[in-house]
Image (tube, rainbow over the protein chains, first blue to last red):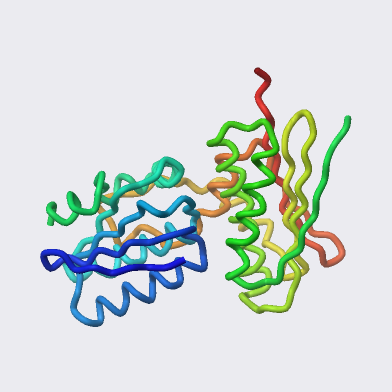
Length: 110
Length: 147
């Protein structure tokens, strides 16, 4: 499980790998809070290499969105695998997050 | 009816949730479930394991979480057991009924947590929770559709 960060056009792209469960969720929350502390509020979470998502993972995405939203920032999601997309739709969070086919499209949308 | 059962025990650490999930995923692949149903069983089991670690044991390591996986011709039964603080039956009922609906115009009002039991209830065919002599078990069934 790891999170790679890349900055493209002033947007931070967080590429996650593995299973976004309670363990990786904890890392994601911490990384997002570090970025917000550094004044970074526009992010893309690239889920291309994530093949499992549960409610803890969803909770970390919602927490991140709420934090940046207060500062007029945004978090967009990119490259969802089918099981991940199904869980996001089951929990209606596709109505809350903007979702893109790939990270480049998500970055361009800011 | 013939059945196959396997039981595994993990220590109550969140780092072990992935391990449990991967084992459950492999066991689900032995059942005649669709790929998506197998994934939903995996998610439900991981939700219950997470609940045992984070709520029953309040993230305290050194306790057992038992996962019992049973397969028969009719489907899969997964039982997740702990000896921690039992779920409040009232909260359990409320969560069962809680909606997954969100208001996209009210980001602040979207809860960070509380979706686990709602997901389990949405995707599994039968869900029960028992608490007896200090042992708490979440029992979840997924039936296999006949061809």
